[in-house]
Structures are given as structure tokens and as C-alpha cells.
Amino acid sequence: MIVLVINSGSSSIKFQVIRMDDRSRLCAGLLERIGLEDGTFTFEPDGREKLQSAAKISDHSQGIGLILQAIADPQHGVLSSVREIAAVGHRVVHGGETIRRAELVTPRVEAIIEECGKLAPLHNPANLTGIRAVRNLLPSVPQVGVFDTAFHATMPEESFLFALPYGCYQEHGIRRFGFHGTSHRFVSRRAAEILGRDTRDFACVSCHMGNGVSIAAIRDGRSVDTSLGFGTMCGAPMGTRAGDVDPAAVLYMIDALGMSSQEVRRLLYYESGLKGVSGLSSDMRDIVAAAGSGNRRAALALQVFAHGCRRHIASLATSLGGRLDALIFTAGIGEHSPESRRLICQGLEVLGIEIDDGRNAAIGVEATISSSSSRVPVLVVPTNEELMIAIETEEAIGRRGCG
Image 1 (spheres, one colour):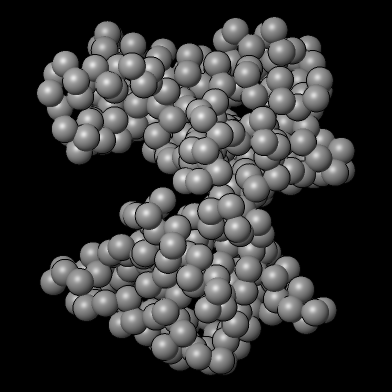
Image 2 (cartoon, one colour; image 1 turned 90 degrees about the vertical axis):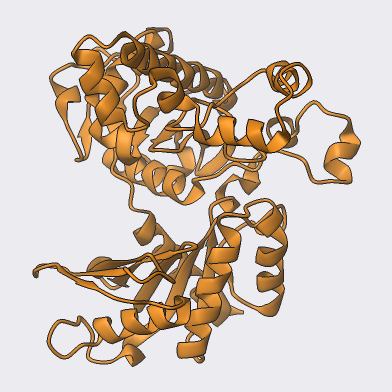
């Protein structure tokens, strides 16, 4: 079975082609700056030279057409024909309370994606645009939506409810949803494999740390708690997002400082986090380098980040029913920043966590970085959200075949 994985943004499309027999990636690519004069198209057939070219791409339908043309190109492609594509799996950010697993795209599912656009206005409309563009060009190929929020649909009420008047949830759907579910599901399953454990009897805390950060408590293959909430701003500090902020401070900005809601929104989402504290950059590589050169604000940003992650790791561990079988680091910072991992783990000895400085030097590869005396294994597991989307797409197609 050949699955085309699509991650459609407002002005970009990431894609991979995956052969499910051996779960091998045949190619990957990226279309950028859709709708602008200076678009670019990057196509990377596995094992061969990466190709990059300028491409004026007017809309997503044209972009999908270009992708399909490249995939089946006689000289550079990886398939003899696009007819080999058995299914298309789409990353979709928000499925609300209704979507609890990957779903075949039907008019009902499309309507849910559209409705949830008000909860994820930067993502869901773009995801839906990609789905409709694929339908125009591959009308007979089944499409599957794989939702970031679906993995967290197993959280119990005490985890997803805010302590607001119950009507805020009952009437308006204000609750914790959680995000990065595809990544959390992949790395928790892979960590269990590495440790020789059954996923159905495995408790871990998974730290997805990139420009966005979410930390999840996962017990027996199911999410039971997570740091992100109704939106994607709370929890640990992030590249430009503040993370947890006392709502009283937000009200003070509006009432006493006279800031508009849009000004506060911009401050919390785009001017805070590593960028806001350091005054330098949202990129952890820049922060670590500057801190190492004696920049006090960069060092402070690093400490604030580590402290926020550490607090959430420790609190989420209490949702695992008295056991912690692994701590997992993944995504850009989690996979590539030994200094961040080291600082985060300082103070987690109370959970039985100790890391080995030599092992912690690993960058971008699977590694066990805990010391031999650590009661809890600490792992670096590179995420592979595209493969997880392909796996969930195959599962959804299989359910259709059985039903």
C-alpha cells in the first residue's frame, strides 16, 4: 500500500510518500510561498539528490498537481504512476470533542474540520484546503484526516476540565484539548519498543519540544493528561509563546495598561517565550550559544524554559497512577539540545531520573541518555509524524474494509 502524506499550511504544503509494506519513505518535499511570485519547490527522492526549483504556484490545487507530477516523473519520480497511491493521509490540527481517531474524510468530517476552524484558525482552514485540492485531482482515492487532538480524546474529565463554571464547558466547549498527539503517540510507542515493553502496559511522560512545546502523560497507550489546553499557548514556555501566565496579569494588561485583546494576543503568542525573555531570538540554538558566551538574558531564558518544562514533567507524572516507566524527549529542541535536556532533568532526581552527561551528548538520534543508576530510563526518540499519519491512515482504511 502506498500512502501520500500531506501537511497543508496556509502558504505551504509538506508531503511524503510512504510504502507501508516496509514503512519506507520513498520521497519527501516541500512547497513554499503558495500564491506569491517567488514560490519554491523542494523534492527529495530517498537515496538520490535533492531537487529545488523556483515555482510560481497560484493555489493549493496547482501545488498538489505539481507534487503528483514530481512523484510520477519518469526521470526523478518514485512511482510509475499516481494510480499507485492507495490513500492520502492529511494532518489536521483540530477535531474538537467529536473526533477521537483518524477518520475517512466524508462530508460529515469536512464539516467538523470547518467548524473547528474557529478553534484553530491558522491551521484547520489550510488543512481543509489541502483535502479539497487532493479531491479535485485524485477523486477516487480515499482520504483520511489524522487529527492532532484525537490522541488526547482519552483524557478523563478531571484532566480536561478547567475549574470554570460548568456551563463554560457544557454550553461553549471550553476545555483542555491537547495537541501534538501524532508525535506523542509515535514516540511513546517507539520508546516502549526500545525498552522491550508492551505499549498496553507502559507509563511515560513525553516531551515534544520544538518552537511549540507540549508535554503529555501517557498510560497504556492512552493520553491521560497534557500541558497544552484550549489553545496552543499554555504550559511550558516556547519559542515565542509565553506558556503559563496568571490570568490576573492578562486582565491587568487590558484594564490597567489599556492594551487591546489583539495586542495582548500578539504579546502572548508572538513576543514572549525564549524570544521575549532573551530579547534575542526564539531559536534555542541561538539562546544556548549566547548563554555560553555570557549573555545573561539568554541564560535566564534557558533557565525559565527548563524550569517550566521541569514543573510540567513532575506534575504530569502524578497522573500516571503511581508509575513512571520512561521520560521521552523529542522534536527540534528535544532531539538536538543536550543543554536543554540537562537543565530540565536537574531536580527530577525526586522522580528517580538521572542523566549521563556523555550519553546526553546525542543529537538527532535515538539514544538512552539516563545514567546506569537512574531508576527511570530517559530516552531521546526522534519523532516521525509523517509515518504515524501513514500508519493511522492505513488503520482507517482497514476499518472501512472491515465495516
